[in-house]
Image (cartoon, rainbow, N blue to C red; front, side, top):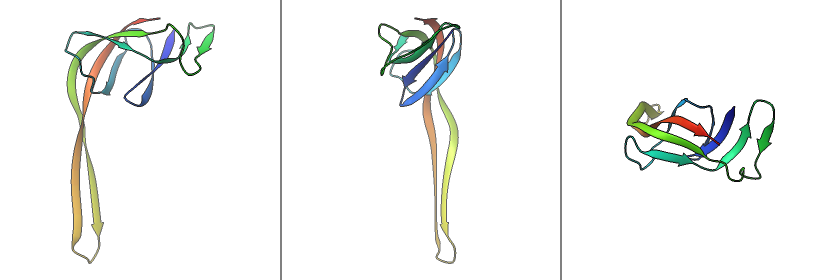
Length: 102
C-alpha cells in the first residue's frame, strides 16, 4: 500500500514506516503531524486518484528531528570584468516517520 502526499510544495510517494525528509514543519520533536492533502492512494490492487485530493484520507506521521540539508553553492562569474559572486544556502528540513496511512 502506498500514498502520494503533498507538503512544502512537493509531492512524495510514501509507505508505512518510511523515513521522509521534507521542508521544515513547525512542530515539536516527537509530536504527531497529519499530512494532507492525499493526492493518490493504492492498496496494491486498486489505485484511487483524487480530484484534486482523496476525500477523508490522511497520513499520520511523527517528527523524528529537525536538521539542515547539504549546502548548495551558487557561483556567478563574468570573465575579465572583475565580477564574481558566491552565495551558499542550507535548507531547513524536518525528518518524519510515516506511521499510519488511510
